[in-house]
Each structure stands twice: as structure tokens, then as C-alpha cells.
Length: 220
Image (cartoon, rainbow, N blue to C red):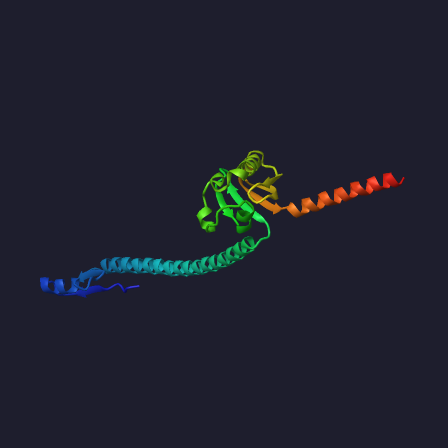
């Protein structure tokens, strides 16, 4: 804090006053002056000095708090980026398809497996952000997927369906989960599994069971 300077002089000529004022003193007392005048000026100088000292101390404390806050934000940002990178890696390498849409069915996540199962054109995942899901889907599966998403957003309940994608002749199982925010559906997540082999195996087991029953009846 800058010291408060008070000039006290017996010189009253203009040159002396001008020289003193170039130094920007807090006050200028010309002799003779009364003790009350001196006390009043010194009191004001001391009060202003204290106020400036207090403001400077608050500024220093505020600067320290800002620096601590900046470090905390930087730490949290780095951790969030690391978590997002990990999550993107897990989602990208998932063995199931994953699609996330908002309540208006605009896409904000669509992994490579979902694109493969639904036979979408390859493109960067960032290119799908905010794009209406219906515009990304081929006509062969658009109705099933959009109908499922719309029902989940409207009802707020988990729903599932199975359909055969004629583009790759794969039987797909779709399960859609609502994402709630303050008792309102704000988004929906669709998990897609290829159940072609599972369905084929179940049919074979059923056929074997039928043949075994027929054999038992014939033998009996």
C-alpha cells in the first residue's frame, strides 16, 4: 500500500506548491496550522491507508482462492477427460450396439457395433451428434427402431423388440431404457444384440425335442 504523504511547510509561493503537488501528496499544510487541522488530516490519511490495506488483503485472499479454484477445476477437468476417454474406449469396443437419443430422438451417441448391426454408412461418431436418428437409419429397420424409441420416450418404461434386418439377414434384439430427469424422460438408450445364432440354436433344440418326442411315441 502506498504511503500517505503530507507536506508541512512555511513556504506558500506558487512554485513550492506546484513542486509539492507533482508528488501527489495526500495533504498540504502551510504553517502556521492548528493542532485540530493536523489531527483531522492525519486521521483521514490513516483511515484511507487502513481501508486500502484491507482491500489489498482481501484481493490477495481472493487471488489465492481463485488459484485454488483454478487448480481444482483443472484437476476435475483432467479426470473427466480421462473418464470420458475410458468410457469412449469401452463403448467403442463393446460387443453390443449402443445408441443414445434425446427426447426429440436426436442422436448423441452411436457406437461402431450399432452401425454394423444396423448396416449404417461408416462415418465419424462426432458426425452423428445432434442428427435425427431416423435420418441415419436405413428404411429396412427405421420403423422398428424409431417406434421403440418413441414408445419409451412417451411411456418412460423399458421396452424391447426383436426384428430381422433384411440388409444382413441378422435377427436383432433391441432393448430401450428411459433416462429420467425430474420425473420426465430426457433421453433413451438402445442396446442392440445380434441373436441370430441364439435363435437358430433354440430352433434346433426345439426341433430335436420334437423329434425325440415323436421317437418316443413311435417306440411306445
